[in-house]
Image (cartoon, rainbow, N blue to C red; front, top):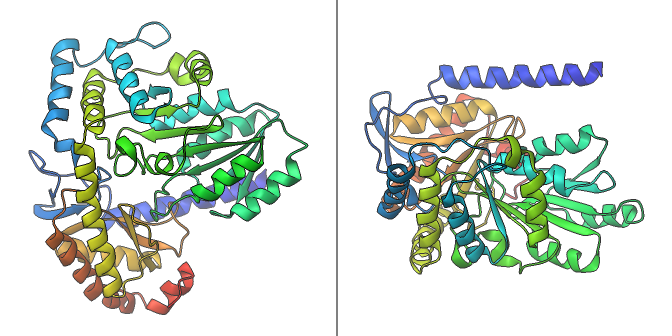
Length: 422
C-alpha cells in the first residue's frame, strides 16, 4: 500500500508539473476570445488561429438543422427538465433513442455522458465471476468504471495493445475459471487514431463462446460506417455478445453518450439497474433536440457526402505528411493524426512555434501518452481547408528540426521512442 501511495503521489506531481509548465508557456488551459465561432478560426491571446484541436470531425456543430433542433427544444421544453429517468423522462429521450436504434439496428439507451454510460453499463453487465481483459490503451473513462469491478473483487487483466494472440492465450488459460470473459477496447484509439483489429476479434468471438466484446467507439462515430454508426459497426455485424458505447459530443455534434446493446433484455437491465439511470441528472433539452436533428442527418444520404468530404481532407493530410517525412505514428484513415516529437520539451516548443504561426494543435503529453511519447495530436474536420492542412504541415516540417535542436534531441530519438522504421 505504501508503494502504491508513493507511485500515485509521484504521478500526481508529474501531471501537476506538466500542466503548470504548459499553462505557463501559454499553450494549454486557454480560453477562446471570440464572440462567435465558425468551426475553423479561434482567437487566443488576441490573435486568430486555425483550430486543429476539435473532435467535431464532421463539422456538424455549425449545421443549421442541428442548431435549429436545439433552439426548438429549448423553446418547447425550457433549458432543463430536472428529473431522474427512474421517475420521469422528457419525450425527446424516446424520440432520440428510437432514431439511434434505427441507425445502429440495435437497441440503444442514451446517457448524460459516455463516461457516465460506462458507469451504468459495466457494473450491471459484468458479474463477480467474470474476467475482464482490457487493452493497454483502453480509454480512461472505461478504466475508471472498471475500478468499481475491481473494488468488489472482480478480476481484471491488461493485454498489450492490439495483441490478439496474447488475448487468446489469456482466454485459453482462463476459460474454465470464469463464467464470461470480457475484452474491452476502443474502436478508434483516441491518441494515435489507430484501430482495434476488429476482424481478428470477430474470429475470436466465433471461436470462444465465453468471450464478450465491449467497445468504446467514441472517436469512430459519424465519420464512417452505414448511417455514420462508426468504425466498429462498419466492420462487425450485429452479434449477441457485442456491446458498444459511443459519444454524441464529438462528430455527432450533440450531447451525451449512447449505449448500444445486442438485445432488449440487456438494455432493460442497464436502464433499470444502472446508477446513471437512477441517480444522475438528465440530458438537457437542447442537447436532446440537437441529437434528434443529427440522427435525422445520419439517416439521410447527406451523411455520406460529409464522410467523403472528410476523407478527402484526411487523405491529403496523410499523403503530404508522408511526402514531408514527418513522423506520423499511425497509417489509419481516421481523422485523428499524431505526429511524434518524443520528449515533452520538444512538444512544448512545437505547440508554441505553431501558435506563433497561426495554428492551434493539441499537445499529447503524460499521462495521455508515455512520458517520451509526446506528440502533436491533430484532429481533421470538415471545417479545414486543404490550404490550412498544407500550411500547417509545412510549418511542422520547418519547425520540428529547430525544436529538436533547441531541446537537444533528434529525429532518430523520435523513431526510437515510437519504434518506427526510419
